[in-house]
Length: 181
Length: 144
View: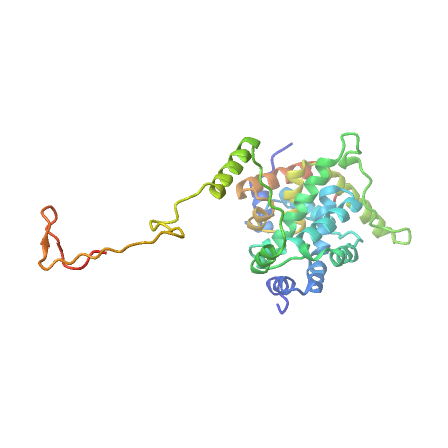
């Protein structure tokens, strides 16, 4: 890749602040998806991702291995999500009962609306999982990470992550038996 | 919560071909994969403008930098140095400094002569070497 992560990081550290835009465009969709699945709320996810990217920019020199920038960014975003979850008051709406993110618009077709409803149902099932299992499932099956990369993101050991993913699958399968066909 | 068949876990971990699974497990496999695919929908959001604006507003000292440049900047920036001393130690320190400044200290081994004083040098000549009893060393030169 011409502009691989290590090159872009080197440019930013050399004073080319605009080059950070390349990294934002490259990782923003995945980070927003991850944060939305973690927090169950697109606005909170946008806040978490924006805070994470600004933090990443400020501490870019501390990224030990720029070729593994993706893991580093997901790690920062995961930490921000955990902070957001910890700040939530007990009288807030539980994640599993929160309104699903608006993914469909009134002008959309019936298929899109149906799909949107299915997404909402799956999201509710996901939101009912404990945060650690939710994170493990999303990183593995939504972001398509290997267990090694997940370990770099979460700081957890691979056997622990495997166990979390297995438990998350069991819980989701049970919850989704009547939903996804 | 019912445990999932290990073969299904293996297939979902990519360690087994899903086609090898029995029909009921294949159905469960498809259900979980379909759920994961639904979650891959990316929200219609963007924080790029917000992040870029925040980065542009950032003060210079908060910009990212290499270690060497950060170290150089750290050394070049004024820093407040704070000493915390107990008053008793402060008094002791002040007394010590006063003693050093005010008490007359001997200026080396050579006395400074006054106005009506002088220093006389005595030179001894020994025609034969003098042998010392204790150290067996000889003095051949002049003693000032």
